Length: 336
Image 1 (tube, rainbow, N blue to C red):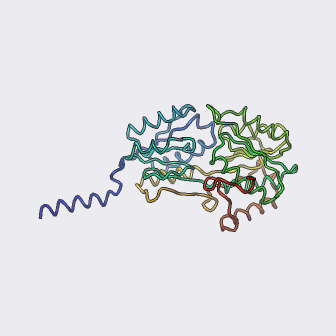
Image 2 (image 1 turned 90 degrees about the vertical axis):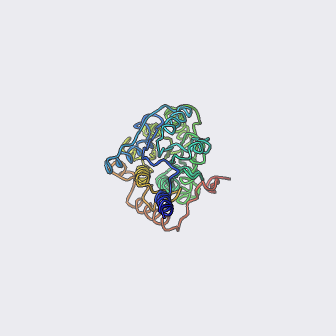
Image 3 (image 1 turned 180 degrees about the vertical axis):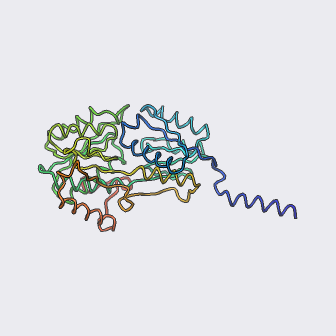
Protein backbone atom coordinates (compact mmCIF):
# COMPACT_ATOMS: atom_id res chain seq x y z
CA UNK A 1 0.00 0.00 0.00
CA UNK A 2 2.89 2.31 0.79
CA UNK A 3 4.25 1.87 -2.75
CA UNK A 4 0.86 2.75 -4.25
CA UNK A 5 0.76 5.91 -2.15
CA UNK A 6 4.23 6.94 -3.32
CA UNK A 7 3.26 6.24 -6.94
CA UNK A 8 0.15 8.42 -6.63
CA UNK A 9 2.25 11.29 -5.26
CA UNK A 10 4.68 11.00 -8.17
CA UNK A 11 1.87 10.91 -10.73
CA UNK A 12 0.11 13.89 -9.22
CA UNK A 13 3.35 15.86 -9.25
CA UNK A 14 3.80 15.09 -12.95
CA UNK A 15 0.21 15.99 -13.82
CA UNK A 16 0.27 19.25 -11.88
CA UNK A 17 3.57 20.21 -13.44
CA UNK A 18 3.11 19.60 -17.18
CA UNK A 19 6.05 21.82 -18.03
CA UNK A 20 8.43 20.48 -15.42
CA UNK A 21 11.22 20.29 -18.02
CA UNK A 22 11.26 24.10 -18.06
CA UNK A 23 12.59 26.59 -15.56
CA UNK A 24 9.84 27.22 -13.00
CA UNK A 25 11.09 30.57 -11.71
CA UNK A 26 9.65 33.65 -13.41
CA UNK A 27 12.73 35.73 -14.31
CA UNK A 28 11.90 37.69 -17.48
CA UNK A 29 14.54 39.71 -19.31
CA UNK A 30 14.37 42.04 -22.30
CA UNK A 31 17.50 43.16 -24.13
CA UNK A 32 17.24 46.31 -26.25
CA UNK A 33 19.65 47.15 -29.02
CA UNK A 34 20.38 50.86 -28.67
CA UNK A 35 18.65 53.30 -26.35
CA UNK A 36 14.95 52.66 -25.84
CA UNK A 37 13.92 56.27 -26.48
CA UNK A 38 15.75 56.30 -29.83
CA UNK A 39 13.67 53.52 -31.38
CA UNK A 40 9.87 53.70 -31.66
CA UNK A 41 9.65 49.89 -31.65
CA UNK A 42 11.55 49.71 -28.35
CA UNK A 43 9.45 52.53 -26.88
CA UNK A 44 6.29 50.50 -27.47
CA UNK A 45 7.85 47.38 -25.96
CA UNK A 46 8.93 49.27 -22.84
CA UNK A 47 5.40 50.66 -22.47
CA UNK A 48 4.07 47.10 -22.27
CA UNK A 49 6.66 46.18 -19.65
CA UNK A 50 5.75 49.19 -17.53
CA UNK A 51 2.07 48.32 -17.74
CA UNK A 52 2.84 44.79 -16.55
CA UNK A 53 4.93 46.03 -13.64
CA UNK A 54 2.19 48.41 -12.49
CA UNK A 55 -0.45 45.69 -12.84
CA UNK A 56 1.40 42.91 -11.03
CA UNK A 57 4.14 44.52 -8.97
CA UNK A 58 6.59 42.10 -10.58
CA UNK A 59 10.01 43.17 -11.77
CA UNK A 60 11.37 42.67 -15.28
CA UNK A 61 15.02 43.00 -16.15
CA UNK A 62 15.57 45.42 -19.02
CA UNK A 63 18.98 46.25 -20.43
CA UNK A 64 20.24 48.44 -23.27
CA UNK A 65 23.26 47.34 -25.28
CA UNK A 66 25.03 48.31 -28.50
CA UNK A 67 23.95 47.48 -32.03
CA UNK A 68 26.21 44.57 -33.01
CA UNK A 69 24.78 41.07 -33.37
CA UNK A 70 27.73 39.66 -31.42
CA UNK A 71 27.00 41.83 -28.38
CA UNK A 72 23.32 40.92 -28.61
CA UNK A 73 24.00 37.17 -28.74
CA UNK A 74 26.63 37.41 -25.99
CA UNK A 75 24.19 39.23 -23.73
CA UNK A 76 21.33 36.80 -24.40
CA UNK A 77 23.72 33.91 -23.75
CA UNK A 78 24.73 35.42 -20.41
CA UNK A 79 21.13 35.66 -19.24
CA UNK A 80 20.29 32.16 -20.47
CA UNK A 81 23.29 30.78 -18.58
CA UNK A 82 22.10 32.60 -15.46
CA UNK A 83 18.70 30.92 -15.59
CA UNK A 84 16.53 33.79 -16.80
CA UNK A 85 13.21 32.74 -18.32
CA UNK A 86 11.35 33.84 -20.32
CA UNK A 87 13.91 35.63 -22.47
CA UNK A 88 12.45 38.04 -25.01
CA UNK A 89 14.04 38.00 -28.46
CA UNK A 90 12.58 41.25 -29.75
CA UNK A 91 14.73 41.34 -32.87
CA UNK A 92 14.17 37.74 -33.92
CA UNK A 93 13.96 38.57 -37.61
CA UNK A 94 17.60 39.79 -37.40
CA UNK A 95 18.84 36.74 -35.48
CA UNK A 96 19.87 34.20 -38.18
CA UNK A 97 21.07 31.50 -35.76
CA UNK A 98 18.08 31.63 -33.44
CA UNK A 99 17.08 27.97 -33.84
CA UNK A 100 20.44 26.39 -32.90
CA UNK A 101 20.71 28.95 -30.09
CA UNK A 102 17.37 28.13 -28.41
CA UNK A 103 18.08 24.41 -28.77
CA UNK A 104 21.07 24.86 -26.48
CA UNK A 105 18.67 25.92 -23.72
CA UNK A 106 15.71 23.49 -23.83
CA UNK A 107 14.69 24.40 -20.26
CA UNK A 108 14.42 28.11 -21.09
CA UNK A 109 11.38 29.70 -22.67
CA UNK A 110 11.93 32.31 -25.38
CA UNK A 111 9.31 34.83 -26.47
CA UNK A 112 9.81 36.17 -29.99
CA UNK A 113 8.20 39.15 -31.69
CA UNK A 114 7.18 39.18 -35.36
CA UNK A 115 9.03 35.95 -36.12
CA UNK A 116 7.78 32.36 -36.10
CA UNK A 117 10.06 29.42 -35.28
CA UNK A 118 8.70 25.90 -34.82
CA UNK A 119 10.56 25.05 -31.64
CA UNK A 120 8.93 23.71 -28.42
CA UNK A 121 10.41 26.43 -26.21
CA UNK A 122 9.77 29.38 -28.57
CA UNK A 123 6.55 31.39 -28.36
CA UNK A 124 5.81 33.89 -31.12
CA UNK A 125 3.67 37.01 -30.94
CA UNK A 126 3.17 38.39 -34.44
CA UNK A 127 1.50 41.69 -35.24
CA UNK A 128 -0.20 41.96 -38.63
CA UNK A 129 1.90 44.84 -39.94
CA UNK A 130 0.66 44.19 -43.47
CA UNK A 131 -2.93 44.97 -42.46
CA UNK A 132 -2.05 48.30 -40.87
CA UNK A 133 0.26 49.11 -43.77
CA UNK A 134 -2.59 48.45 -46.21
CA UNK A 135 -4.55 51.27 -44.56
CA UNK A 136 -1.47 53.51 -44.64
CA UNK A 137 -1.05 52.88 -48.38
CA UNK A 138 -4.72 53.51 -49.03
CA UNK A 139 -4.57 56.87 -47.25
CA UNK A 140 -1.35 57.80 -49.05
CA UNK A 141 -3.03 57.14 -52.40
CA UNK A 142 -6.03 59.24 -51.41
CA UNK A 143 -3.93 62.33 -50.72
CA UNK A 144 -1.15 61.95 -53.31
CA UNK A 145 -1.31 64.52 -56.08
CA UNK A 146 1.71 63.33 -58.04
CA UNK A 147 0.65 59.70 -58.35
CA UNK A 148 3.96 58.65 -56.77
CA UNK A 149 4.49 57.59 -53.17
CA UNK A 150 7.49 56.08 -51.40
CA UNK A 151 8.56 53.49 -48.84
CA UNK A 152 11.84 53.65 -46.89
CA UNK A 153 13.26 50.91 -44.67
CA UNK A 154 16.63 49.58 -43.58
CA UNK A 155 17.43 45.88 -44.03
CA UNK A 156 15.78 44.19 -47.01
CA UNK A 157 14.17 41.17 -45.33
CA UNK A 158 10.87 39.36 -45.78
CA UNK A 159 9.70 40.97 -42.56
CA UNK A 160 10.33 44.51 -43.80
CA UNK A 161 8.85 43.68 -47.19
CA UNK A 162 5.69 42.73 -45.32
CA UNK A 163 5.22 46.44 -44.56
CA UNK A 164 5.96 47.34 -48.18
CA UNK A 165 3.63 44.71 -49.60
CA UNK A 166 0.71 45.78 -47.43
CA UNK A 167 1.38 49.45 -48.20
CA UNK A 168 1.48 48.79 -51.94
CA UNK A 169 -1.70 46.71 -51.91
CA UNK A 170 -3.56 49.44 -50.04
CA UNK A 171 -2.35 52.16 -52.40
CA UNK A 172 -3.28 50.20 -55.50
CA UNK A 173 -6.67 49.30 -54.05
CA UNK A 174 -7.44 53.04 -54.14
CA UNK A 175 -5.53 53.99 -57.29
CA UNK A 176 -4.41 51.10 -59.48
CA UNK A 177 -1.89 53.10 -61.51
CA UNK A 178 -0.12 54.73 -58.56
CA UNK A 179 3.66 54.24 -58.50
CA UNK A 180 5.30 53.03 -55.29
CA UNK A 181 9.01 53.80 -54.98
CA UNK A 182 10.91 51.65 -52.50
CA UNK A 183 14.35 51.77 -50.91
CA UNK A 184 16.40 49.97 -48.26
CA UNK A 185 19.54 51.49 -46.77
CA UNK A 186 21.26 48.15 -46.14
CA UNK A 187 22.50 45.86 -43.41
CA UNK A 188 25.48 47.31 -41.54
CA UNK A 189 26.38 48.22 -37.98
CA UNK A 190 24.20 51.06 -36.75
CA UNK A 191 21.94 50.95 -39.81
CA UNK A 192 18.74 51.12 -37.76
CA UNK A 193 19.84 54.46 -36.34
CA UNK A 194 21.40 55.93 -39.49
CA UNK A 195 19.08 58.85 -40.18
CA UNK A 196 21.45 60.29 -42.77
CA UNK A 197 20.95 57.21 -44.97
CA UNK A 198 17.14 57.14 -44.68
CA UNK A 199 16.93 60.90 -45.21
CA UNK A 200 19.03 60.56 -48.35
CA UNK A 201 16.71 57.87 -49.71
CA UNK A 202 13.64 59.97 -48.92
CA UNK A 203 15.10 62.98 -50.71
CA UNK A 204 15.90 60.87 -53.76
CA UNK A 205 12.29 59.70 -53.86
CA UNK A 206 10.99 63.24 -53.54
CA UNK A 207 13.32 64.24 -56.38
CA UNK A 208 11.53 61.57 -58.45
CA UNK A 209 8.15 63.03 -57.56
CA UNK A 210 7.01 61.15 -54.47
CA UNK A 211 4.82 63.35 -52.28
CA UNK A 212 4.02 60.84 -49.50
CA UNK A 213 6.67 58.55 -47.93
CA UNK A 214 6.06 55.76 -45.43
CA UNK A 215 8.99 54.88 -43.20
CA UNK A 216 9.41 51.54 -41.42
CA UNK A 217 12.96 52.19 -40.30
CA UNK A 218 13.15 52.05 -36.51
CA UNK A 219 15.47 54.66 -35.04
CA UNK A 220 16.39 55.87 -38.53
CA UNK A 221 12.76 56.56 -39.38
CA UNK A 222 12.16 60.04 -37.89
CA UNK A 223 14.77 61.43 -40.29
CA UNK A 224 12.43 60.52 -43.14
CA UNK A 225 9.62 62.49 -41.52
CA UNK A 226 11.98 65.44 -41.04
CA UNK A 227 13.08 65.33 -44.67
CA UNK A 228 9.49 65.28 -45.89
CA UNK A 229 8.52 68.18 -43.64
CA UNK A 230 11.49 70.24 -44.86
CA UNK A 231 10.30 69.92 -48.45
CA UNK A 232 6.59 70.36 -47.90
CA UNK A 233 5.78 66.69 -48.48
CA UNK A 234 4.06 64.19 -46.23
CA UNK A 235 5.57 61.39 -44.19
CA UNK A 236 3.95 58.41 -42.47
CA UNK A 237 5.22 57.26 -39.08
CA UNK A 238 5.38 53.74 -37.69
CA UNK A 239 5.26 51.72 -34.45
CA UNK A 240 4.01 54.57 -32.23
CA UNK A 241 2.07 57.74 -32.92
CA UNK A 242 4.64 60.05 -34.52
CA UNK A 243 2.12 62.59 -35.83
CA UNK A 244 3.30 65.17 -33.33
CA UNK A 245 6.95 65.08 -34.44
CA UNK A 246 6.18 67.38 -37.38
CA UNK A 247 2.55 68.51 -37.01
CA UNK A 248 0.87 69.11 -40.33
CA UNK A 249 3.55 67.16 -42.21
CA UNK A 250 2.94 63.63 -40.90
CA UNK A 251 -0.09 62.25 -42.71
CA UNK A 252 -0.61 59.50 -40.14
CA UNK A 253 1.27 56.82 -38.22
CA UNK A 254 0.83 53.08 -38.61
CA UNK A 255 0.67 52.31 -34.92
CA UNK A 256 1.69 48.86 -33.76
CA UNK A 257 0.45 48.16 -30.27
CA UNK A 258 3.48 46.06 -29.49
CA UNK A 259 2.90 47.06 -25.88
CA UNK A 260 -0.27 44.95 -25.91
CA UNK A 261 1.64 41.91 -27.17
CA UNK A 262 4.37 42.37 -24.58
CA UNK A 263 1.86 42.82 -21.77
CA UNK A 264 -0.09 39.72 -22.86
CA UNK A 265 3.11 37.67 -23.17
CA UNK A 266 4.28 38.65 -19.69
CA UNK A 267 0.88 37.95 -18.14
CA UNK A 268 0.68 34.52 -19.75
CA UNK A 269 4.25 33.72 -18.74
CA UNK A 270 3.63 34.83 -15.16
CA UNK A 271 0.59 32.54 -14.98
CA UNK A 272 2.48 29.64 -16.57
CA UNK A 273 0.12 29.48 -19.55
CA UNK A 274 1.89 28.10 -22.62
CA UNK A 275 -0.95 26.46 -24.54
CA UNK A 276 0.29 27.31 -28.02
CA UNK A 277 3.41 28.65 -29.67
CA UNK A 278 1.88 31.27 -31.95
CA UNK A 279 -0.42 34.24 -31.45
CA UNK A 280 -1.29 36.66 -34.25
CA UNK A 281 -2.74 40.09 -33.52
CA UNK A 282 -4.10 42.40 -36.21
CA UNK A 283 -6.85 44.87 -37.01
CA UNK A 284 -9.49 42.61 -35.46
CA UNK A 285 -7.68 42.80 -32.12
CA UNK A 286 -6.93 46.53 -32.54
CA UNK A 287 -3.24 45.66 -32.38
CA UNK A 288 -2.43 47.73 -35.49
CA UNK A 289 -4.07 50.75 -37.06
CA UNK A 290 -3.73 54.37 -38.12
CA UNK A 291 -3.41 57.34 -35.77
CA UNK A 292 -5.70 60.33 -36.17
CA UNK A 293 -5.41 63.32 -33.85
CA UNK A 294 -5.11 67.10 -33.73
CA UNK A 295 -1.71 66.96 -35.44
CA UNK A 296 -3.04 65.53 -38.72
CA UNK A 297 -6.67 66.63 -38.70
CA UNK A 298 -6.01 69.28 -41.35
CA UNK A 299 -4.57 66.62 -43.66
CA UNK A 300 -7.28 63.96 -43.47
CA UNK A 301 -10.84 64.85 -44.43
CA UNK A 302 -13.89 63.23 -42.80
CA UNK A 303 -14.55 61.45 -46.09
CA UNK A 304 -11.05 59.94 -46.03
CA UNK A 305 -11.53 58.84 -42.42
CA UNK A 306 -14.81 57.18 -43.40
CA UNK A 307 -13.19 55.36 -46.34
CA UNK A 308 -10.37 54.10 -44.15
CA UNK A 309 -12.84 52.85 -41.55
CA UNK A 310 -14.79 51.00 -44.23
CA UNK A 311 -11.58 49.37 -45.45
CA UNK A 312 -10.68 48.39 -41.89
CA UNK A 313 -14.06 46.71 -41.42
CA UNK A 314 -13.77 44.85 -44.71
CA UNK A 315 -10.36 43.47 -43.72
CA UNK A 316 -11.66 42.37 -40.31
CA UNK A 317 -14.66 40.67 -41.93
CA UNK A 318 -12.49 38.97 -44.55
CA UNK A 319 -14.04 40.84 -47.46
CA UNK A 320 -10.58 42.19 -48.26
CA UNK A 321 -7.67 39.76 -47.87
CA UNK A 322 -4.30 41.43 -47.55
CA UNK A 323 -1.49 39.24 -48.85
CA UNK A 324 1.12 38.57 -46.17
CA UNK A 325 4.61 38.60 -47.64
CA UNK A 326 6.22 36.67 -44.76
CA UNK A 327 3.93 33.70 -45.41
CA UNK A 328 4.11 33.81 -49.21
CA UNK A 329 7.10 35.86 -50.40
CA UNK A 330 5.42 37.35 -53.41
CA UNK A 331 3.37 40.50 -53.64
CA UNK A 332 1.22 40.67 -56.78
CA UNK A 333 0.84 44.41 -56.28
CA UNK A 334 4.46 45.10 -57.21
CA UNK A 335 6.21 41.86 -58.22
CA UNK A 336 6.33 41.66 -62.04
